[in-house]
Amino acid sequence: KGKGKGKGGKGKKMPKDPTASLSLEYLYEQLVGDGILKKVDPVSLEDFVGSYGLLGQAMDKLAEADPTRLPNPSFAQIRSAVTEYCILPLGSDAVKRHCPLNTAPKGSKRVEKNGTPVLLCGVPGSGKRMLAHAVASSCGANLFDLTPSNTEGKYPGKKGPGDLVHTVLKVAKALPPSVVLIGEAESVWVSGKKKGGGDPPNRILKALTSLLAPKKGAALLEPSDRVLILGTSSQPYACEKAKDYNAFRDFFCKILYLPLPDYAARCKLWTHLLERAGLDRPCLDDVQALARVSDAFSAGAIAEVVRRTITPRRVERLAAKPFSVHDLVSQLAQQEPVYREDDSAMRGWYHKTLGIGVEPEPEGGGKEAK
Image (tube, rainbow, N blue to C red; front, side, top):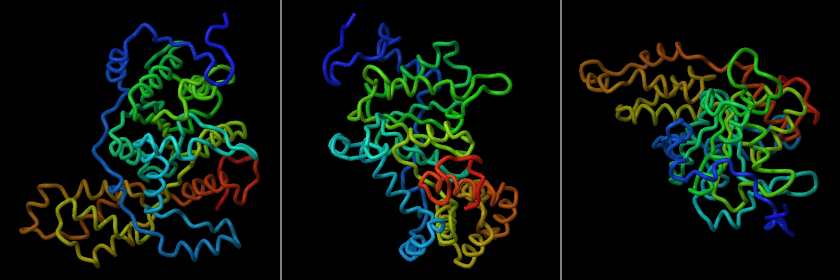
């Protein structure tokens, strides 16, 4: 008894290691075989195409009088924030040591956050998962996927979730830089049992919080470790209970909101995607028309339309059959738009995390209008 204990943080007892007898190489291969350690898609932050907020300063002044009119972040601001909060601390030891992003406000103080958790929230198709792969690709990092749908049926039993989270964090710490992705993050913090069969999405929560911020003893990760906990959420307002909402919000150091592209962003996105697909200098009138009719569609939906329509075979036949904007419009009509209620719920939840226009204790799970 008493081994490993002492004065100060260095003397704290480390959590019990259920994989102490297994080599790091074996654990790495096991995670690859189980589909937890993913291959990183070759994407970069520049693929998150969008415009600058040219009227941002004027809209900020309007928001000073009415906070609910706070403008959405531009795509350029999102790229800058992801670089500052995710890529630079993950890719550089010097930045990680000196940056202030390992702490988060708690009352009047700031407390350290192991893993520097960052949440990307936005409607489906807003680019959350692509940004996660862009962060890992930019840093040459390992990508561990703890999304509930990806861990379904893996590491079963009472001790399974604890072994899973411990193995992932242990390997991520030993082989930096590493990104631990938690997709569908809101489902991890929703309390209660899952209806129907299958593993409950929140089964990793207890192990995750106990290893990152234990009440007693030392945490498995330290603020100096180049490991990033990156959550993504399409329905953060699903955490309706006040206890779930507060725990979900307080877990992350930074919450980045990914809005739907505005008209300028859609013009730039259509142009970029069409040129990359093989069209040489698309007609400006066609691009503007596409930007108008694609209002309320996500960037992912627009990219899917171009991928399905402008195929390599279609590019080869451009000389015989010139490109027509009607080809894209008919395919766009088959995509699911983002309804105003869903967009308002997402924006309302984000405003709630900033303390804008709502009470501190949420009651309706983000259903308020913006």
